[in-house]
Image (cartoon, helix red, strand yellow):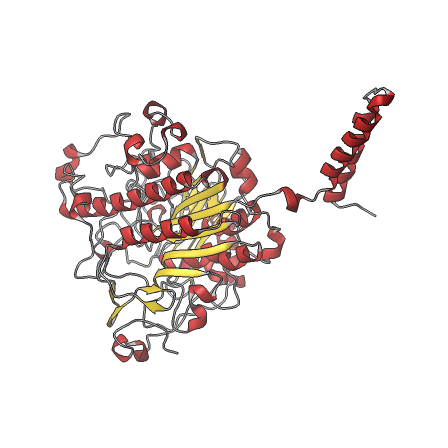
Length: 564
């Protein structure tokens, strides 16, 4: 009978103990010491891993609608010293993909499954629509609770609230402070989504107060950290509202003190957006400072991710930037799905590095569950891959493909296999298919130029961290990862219109999707189309449902909440 790996390790340990003691020549007076030594080594072999392993705390930070070129470590004119510090001291994910829009990414993040396997592949949940993440799927919080974790969410949910059983505190979270819908005013917390209504809760209790949400979420995260029993592993899901647009009447909102940090950004909307990003960056710095002060940082894994590409080109009235990547949020171009992400932890054996290995948002569930000591096989049939060993030890690439999406209702799809990406169909009718600079051309001469002095003034931005735990400013200067687009082709067949014919790109040499090579590589096109058809055969129907007038907050005291 074949022994398990665990028994093989135990047998090897016992064999080592016997060989060690045979090699020690002790006199008779030392026989008692020999027996004691044998017992101690034997006990070490027999103690199960569960009694010696301390599960890490997990802090998962999601920045809403943050674009590729909205962080300092990608060369943005927006300074983000706290985020940059964490990124540069951890593992930056240069080949990281998310879904093109919010609800699909959050469902994928929570379950480890592609949106096509959740019924979330078509657009997002509007507040009056009666649907959500299907109840037969366990969330990351639910899985981690089985490992003994305390689980808390601060911020945005956006996975359904039309029935109470869809709420985060019914899906594995011990507590929730924040909102259930997809957007709202940053100060009044009113959401205009067909109807006007208040959307802010402390668990089920309505909170009708005025505060800037980014700052309030920081305070709530600090409360959780300060009141947490450190002997129990913690999962904190900090799902920020920033930098998503608010309601249509006031899409960009930030306290003036944040906006004033960016006088060199002349475009009014981009400057306010920069202020929103600065508030987000300060929040990250404050939370990390608390982890230091509470002596939790040594056993904490911090993951930072966007939920989708940035809403550039005035999408939703926003001013995000993905340049030089092509496209915007809610497209399958790189600007819509190439995410900003990194991992920071002292548990990593390799830090201060970048990886070009392929990573997808569905990987976070198995990766964090595995890092927490769980058996990934317990997660069932998922699409995500456990990348913990790859991230921890700078291991080889584990993934070879990513399904970006298949939306049968909008008739568009995309997949990446090895170095190639295929796009079919176009949801925006070409409106968001271009390359959109971060500032108007008249401001190009006023760009904030990245250099060693601009980057990483983190001694000030993380001032609360004790000096002995911080590196010096000189050691925190890094060169940002800036994408080199390469030359655009002069071949007229390289022009791409995916609404009329499939487009194929070789992403390593053409990250900005200039050069459509479908016509010269029909065999590769067929291979990727076959891969899409295989995935399509496994898809479930979208669970979207039309708006329900009974959701109208005027029927429920002016508040958005469960109505069925």
